[in-house]
Length: 520
Image 1: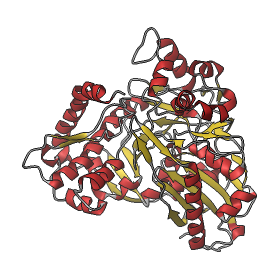
Image 2: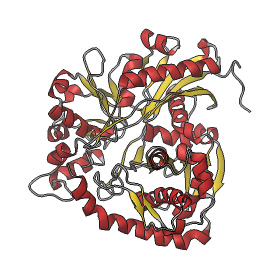
Image 3: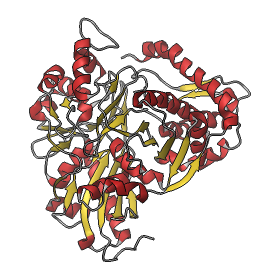
Image 4: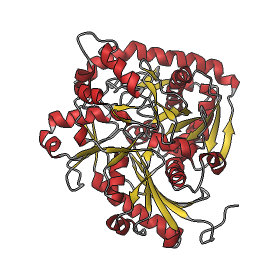
């Protein structure tokens, strides 16, 4: 059993996880034990044409409120707090002025308004899948991937700001990822790590411990190196906590701040699946399937790539589904079918696998992997007058799982091997029903991690402890508990195989309709 607060050999870090719904802040012991945590909501602003923004000042004030609550609950002596580390929603952009102030709302990972700009940059006289072959070759050779044509990567955000907000662009000193903006608030230093900068697609990642900007890619994309942060390696310390940040957070000034990471990177640590090819499935607002791998590679047709990881010397498989848990939120808030997620779980239990062959496609904000298509949209299919509310609810759970299976096929092809077991994290992993449905649909063992909604903030803490040399990476699997393991129910496999095939067919046969309806 881990020692309690106040024990001499136990010290603590403050970990921050800035998700789309708001920050989680936790006090975490050097044993990996989460002593206390608190959450605060932040607003998400969506606009016609694919806009998605949040207020960086609201991020910081919410983090400070959550930190105050978590530290009060933990009641650990200030002298026992030894570091701070952050993770954050990834692939967003904060335009920062000369004095460190945000010049406009942050453009976050959901925003596709830069799609026209990036398509113009990526294309040419001859196009293959929307890319000039010479350009895509350079991107793949140097970075291991390429900007998505949906316009949701930071490179597209910056081009959008340049074209649509020229005054903001003129006054921007540095464009920062959300996690790097938090590090600026904590230390006063404008920097990015090898992993956080990767989605800009302008760094040479071929030598994993010597990542740097590539001038040819900067020229190709039109990004200005002087407006991008200096790079620091993962697993390092950015600098000491400033007096101002210490006062805001209620921490001792001068304690070290770890470099931090995007949420995809920290989730690996929080899932405990840190070894090569040890995979995890994350379901929060969005979802993904990822693992550390020892190689740089890209699969442009499925929009899966490996990029620098938050673990020094490693690459990380990256891919993303735009909406997963967000589909249940949409169901609750807009259709009035159920009051809360527990009610939905109970309804799922009343319906046989297959949901009466009602299919739900979860593409409520377009899709990134295994198809890069910002115009596709979701919906219910094969409804009849006999369809029940419970069948519609279970169809949403199953539709997200079919999407996971579609992605798993692409990830396993990319990895060159079958992934027999996946650690399950994120808010969606709180549902035993969703865990079993994923086991059945994917035909894989699903390991439900304990306290799965805290996986990213746990990951931020573990990354910080590695950077402070308080633990090693090999220590991490034993520090993350598995609550329950779900194995596939073979009796459902025939029905799910049939429905999955039709799920993919629905995309192929309707994508043209959605493109015509949703091209602005």
